[in-house]
Image (cartoon, rainbow, N blue to C red; front, side):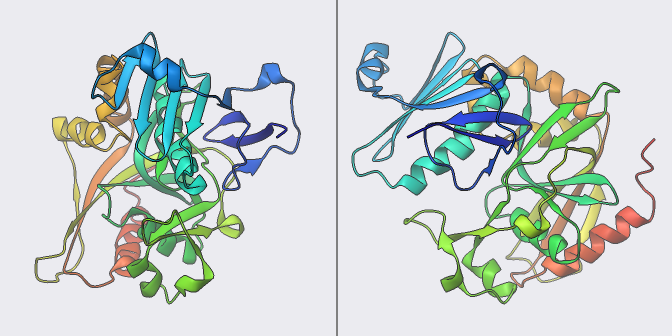
Length: 313
């Protein structure tokens, strides 16, 4: 197929794979202006040449090479190229999921862009990011905020860079959210109206073009979601995260953080999260019980922001 130009995370991608999740670049540019090339290639012999034994991830000379059983081989080269060799009969959605997730996050690391595992929305002209472990409710919370008029900036990966004035900036991802089935039910949405992310899980791809924010926005705050489903339900608790705990939290919630040290980027990560920690508010949101509490959390967050804790200074 003829390669298509897409934009996401502040970068331009030229892809030999159709990526319906991404936004097509309307003013296509010369190949020299492309940031990252996504290409199809048979990587089988190269994988054998690397002789990685039982390892599924290996890094060498600024490249990361990994294998996902029944899905394919993926090679990310020096922040400039992603090469993909799909397995026979691989689920196309699952192949794209790894391109959009792990591969793009590694590209960001290699280019000095910090990828946090979370979602972000725009409130009063500032970006607020929600990080947490898988299933913590990041996408659910950002969907609840979007339903109250706060546009979605990114889901799953939050790409952070710095502007000329030294402010942390979040670049827009792409206009899709991924919600688990219980979240769909909490919003009164019908699962039959949406496609699953891929065949093996009950997580659904929700198009969000109508409330997607397409421009980069300065980052004001980061909220870690800390669910405690086995505790008795109490009001959502918001606390400030201080000192070295901030650094630990930000390192923990770096997307595919295990791949940082493997690529020799541990010092880069420490310096980057130290800089970020010093420039934005960092809080923790603790919710208890197993009830759907997304809208209660929305009220807690917006009340906190409107009290003027962040002044933009």
